[in-house]
Image 1 (cartoon, rainbow, N blue to C red):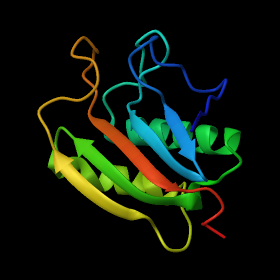
Image 2 (tube, rainbow, N blue to C red):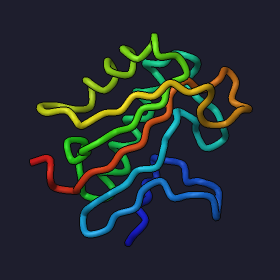
Image 3 (cartoon, rainbow, N blue to C red):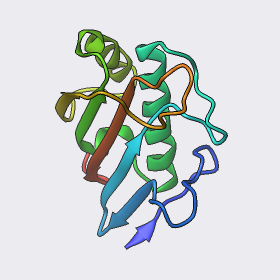
Image 4 (cartoon, helix red, strand yellow):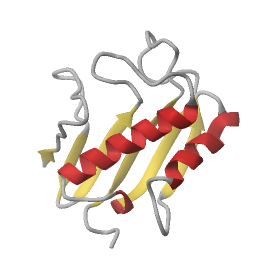
Length: 133
């Protein structure tokens, strides 16, 4: 098992979690939010937050030698189910062809409770590097 790092994606604090792990080309990407390395994020727009998360996925996958279409499944946690179309809008900018399997769950909060304005979406992913064709 190896940990994948990208200079474009802030690392988690030591001894908390890894952003991405790969075993035999099978990968897991941890739940990501739009937070930056110092807790900053792009505001309270769900579309902008989701776009930021998908960009992190892309950066990590490229560091591992993969691409977005290698993602097989995503789990999306949102704080307002009525805004889910904004996540799908951002997703269409990063995936082509046959989109990954998806689960959508409404939760009370995501990410850091200290984020201001509050974070609205968190997404994790699994897949196989090279499987996307």
